[in-house]
Length: 76
Figure (cartoon, rainbow, N blue to C red):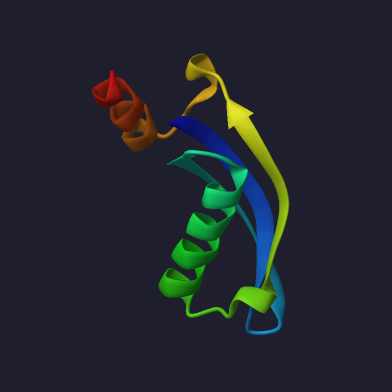
């Protein structure tokens, strides 16, 4: 598993809200699906209103989210 930082925006009440989220996944395709699921369920946004601008793989020292760090450390 690898850590990724996803940046983009989603439409909420006629305003595009930016987001940045760190998640763990096998590859970029899995991470894209996970982000669409998370944003959609938390904010009740349809997938067509979520724009992903960037998916970046992170090194261990770049990870800021403590949950992501914990998941990767437990994996070993």
